[in-house]
Image 1: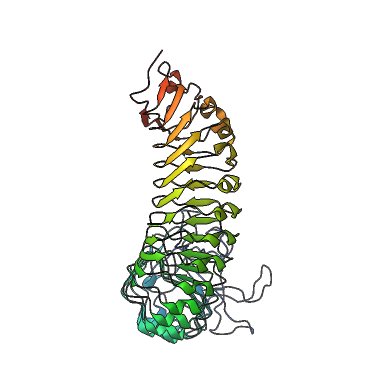
Image 2: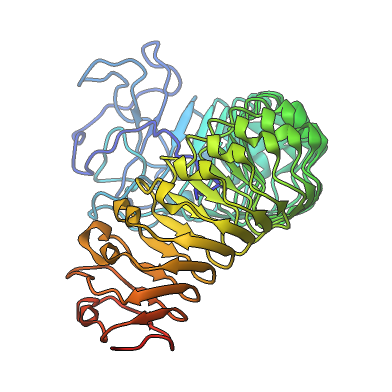
Length: 518
């Protein structure tokens, strides 16, 4: 299952090069603002620092390497931002992936100063993050359009003065240690297109002033401590494409006003305390590709109208209190790749239409009250990698010989009333890692090929509490990955398997009371 918080990787505005790469030498100081009719676009930053040097331009804006327009302007530090009055448009101080270890230790954003080593087209410090607070004097950067301080160790509150940066289009402050509440005057940033405050410790309510941010396309508060309800005013964000409020402490119902945002592609409200029903008019979100309400307190039926959202690729509705039946028209969602309805109170049978979801890779219907047979169509889903139908009341025969094992990695049918035999077709499951058919009424013999090299990735085999008979497995080969083998409560015989000496990774072994030797 994908992480529905979906921490989107921001496109770096700067390339990654060695700290000892291009640069060095003396540079004449350039005046602030426009130079040679070319606007400063991205701040260049350096690694090794001393103390107490104000931010100034250093060097000519022209690019001696390739003559490109809108080149990066080098400067000799970031000490106090109150000194910054130039017309910077973009500041990217995101910490990129670590590539070298010969640069500075953690840097205080309030005292980032004179370098002796700097790199062009890179973000500050590839190894070590910024520390400290975001300076209140950030208000001086009145021309700023993009602010990226994501993936550092910044703490404290987001300064109220950020509301004065009315030219801002992009704010990335995710993956820090910021706390406090979201500034109320953030609603003044009416040019804002993207706002990412994810993975911090921000608390309080979502400000109602967000209704003014009508240019907003992405709003990400994933993994914070936000409380209260989702304000109905969010429905005014008619350009919004991605709304990620998961992993917070939000309560109340899903506001109907959200259904007015016809541009939404991602609606991620997972891991909160939301209650009430899934709105019936969800059909209005015709552009929706991901619907994630996992782990809330939602109840009632899954609306039939969900079948009209034909662009859906991911549905996570597991770990709620949903009841009723799976909508019959779910087979219309032909782009669906992941479907999770697990851990609810859903009843009835599994619709035949699920067997028409040719793009489906993951199907989680476990921990419900489903009954009846497993549709044969599910066995024909060639893309299927994970199938979890455990802890239901499914019964009848399972046509395992029809099951497409081509891409299957995990299959769990345990704790049902299923019957049938495991055929040699299982030997085609070259990617299979876990097979759990325990606590059913399966019978017949266990194919010896299960221990062969054709299932080299298998690490869990749980067939306990069935009616298998015949000889015990004898063929697990050298280098197998088996960690769990449970054959308890079957009727198997043979000598204590010699292959056990080749199972060097085994952690759980249960051959059961009904195993005996001849």
